[in-house]
Image (cartoon, rainbow, N blue to C red):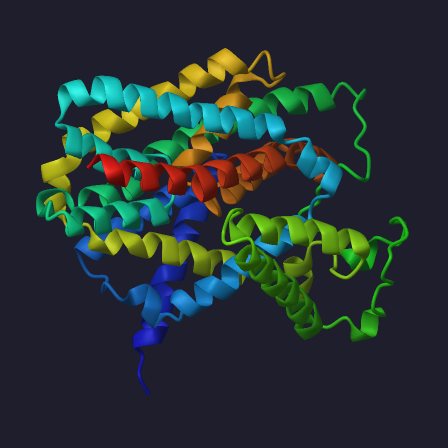
Length: 400
C-alpha cells in the first residue's frame, strides 16, 4: 500500500488548519488563505513535492467538478433580486481594474521596460487563465526571460490582496454590526443568506414551482446529482453562447434560478455534507500553482512585481474613493469590491464569510453581515477575474 497520497493529504489539511487557526486567533485580520498560501510556498521550497496536490486527489478533473458544484451552490444562497442589486459592485470593480491599468501602464512603463509591464498587468487584474495566456504569449514570441513573470504576479498579488481586503471587510463589518445593534434593522427572508440553514429547516419558505423531495429521500447523492445537472446545463448554455458569458457566471445564475423554482435545495452543498471538502480541494489546487516559482526566479523579478502591485492597488483605491459615494457604498466596501480582482473565487467567499463570523455575535447578526457583504464580493470577483482579466489578456497579447 502506497502512503504517498495519505501523507500528501495530511500535509495539505495541516496547512489549511494552520491558516484557520491563525485567522481565528487574529479575529480574521490575518485571513486563513494568506497563511495557507505562505505555508505552501515554503513547503514547495523545502520538503513538499511539486505534485503533492494532484497526489492528494485534487487534480484537474476534481477542480472541474468542484467549480461547477460550488458556483451552482453559491447561487442557491441568493435570489435574482439580490443578484440584480449588485450592479454597483460590478461598476466599482471594473473601474478599479481600469485604475490599475492606467497607473501601471503610465507610471510603470517609466520605471520598467514595456514588455515587463505588459506581461505583468493582465494577471494583476486577476485570474489564472490570464497568467497562463500571457505565459504562452511570451513563449511564442521567444521572450524567455519574462516567462516566470505572469504566474509569479498571479501568485504574489494575492499576498497583498488578502490582508488588505480582510482589513476593509472588518471595517465594513464593524460598521454594519453597529448599525444592526441599534435594533432598527430587519432582514427580509428574500435578502437573507444563512450559511448553515438548509431546506430541512425552512418550512415557512414561499411556495415553489417544483415541490420538495420528501426528507427521507433527500439524500446526499440526490442533492449532488441535481446540483451537477444544473452545472452541466449551465456549461452547455455557455457553449451555445460561444463563451460570451463565462460558464461559471452562468452556473451562479442557474443556481439562483433552479433554487427559486424548487429543483435545487437551499445551501445545497452544505446539505449534501461536502461543502468544506470542495472548498479545501479547490484552495489546494489554487495554491499548487506556487510550485512553479523558484526562489531565484522570484528574486530576479520581485522588484517590478512589488512596484506594479502597489501601483495597481493605488489605482483601485483611487477608483473606490471616486465612486463610493455616488454608488452609495462605504469606501471600505468599495475598495474591497475592487480588490477582488487580486484573487476572485474561492478566496473572496472565504475571506468574507470568515470576517462575518468573527464579527457577528449570533446567527442573525452574522446572516445580516453575510447578506450585505458576500453578494457584492462574489459578483465583483466574477466581473474582474472571470471576465475582465481574460479580455485584457487578449488585448495585451497584441501589445507584447
